Image 1 (cartoon, rainbow, N blue to C red):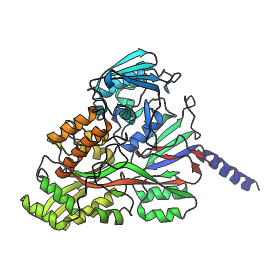
Image 2 (image 1 turned 135 degrees about the vertical axis):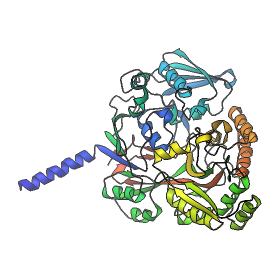
Image 3 (image 1 turned 180 degrees about the vertical axis):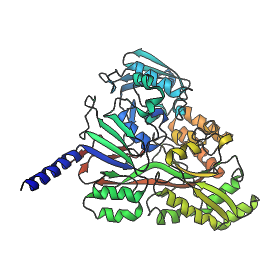
Image 4 (image 1 turned 90 degrees about the horizontal axis):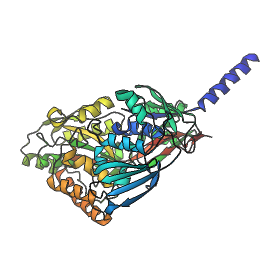
Length: 502
């Protein structure tokens, strides 16, 4: 009898402990937890729980104040005055105020930090502290996407005291104002967060959150099936039906603002010839990949950005046409077999390595022999962002989520020549007309005018084919039934601060 009661006690204790921690299985480990340097969604997901932005983009696509209380424009759109919420402290007890905002925004655009996202505030001239809870952003020109850009997780306001105290080690010791505080990061194993008991807003119902990196999709599925994880991201198509039949698990499909593509190094042979890049686009059967690799989950790209983003317009499709591909290769003077290296991540995007393997087989049909090379995610990003003189990549898969909901963020960093790697223009693409159109769209104040400029820019980009335009993602997430209120955001962030156990 005593043994039975003891066993029951242990079971109840284990259940109580499980109710204290939510476990989320992501595909990769974060790269950094310093907001302006966090280039990928797994990093941004963790950062968003710790550090908050002045504004936020809701799952419905609306821009609303977060740390800001209100705002106003003046001087023909060249001055943005932001009123801040009062009574907020960072996790280290220091006050959130106008001086902290000034410190963060100046750090964000500084050459010393060299944030890859500095382009978001490239029109910022200076930041003025009006009073303790008011800041004024002076802009060089009217800047249409400024509010959208201030929703980006890289602009999160972090503790100046902690940044100064930790120096280069701040990336491993983040301090924000968010609903969770950073507790521990065991690289390659887990990141642990604990509830901020002094949070200025509604406190999270669940005291602890753990993010674990699990590159293999089948392993993530197994973890959520057995209850070792409560949430698993990017569920493989072959596992969806089984999970849907499992009463303990809910399969959630969420639209995404992410486009998946393979970029070329457009400055080096053979991909410095647009005909070769067009040929590869015609050689890839996107419909076959969508149906048989992605299980019908996704949407074939007809523009460099996805629907649902301001500025999107359908430009067209590169139809699958191997004969046309071979003809373009002949016109470009390319002899086959053409041997290239295709870099591909594993576990970062939905069915990423499987998509690359399918493309490898399709390219073989037109005389292109692609060798696939993969790396750990952090090393992969480091390799792809090397400057041109050091960059040896010919083709590589990446994805881009236009998380601000504005085409400026989806086009300017990826196609403007000022953003060559180590910026996000990994293709080293350059077209003076595209540069001009994208620059004009940034400072145009008329929505219809901006839309037309983006349409013209995208049409030129499409013809130049610096990418293999693949598909936009639909997020497929498995969530245990005992969890409610977990948010899968269209910006591909997984948010636990409204979640609770039933």
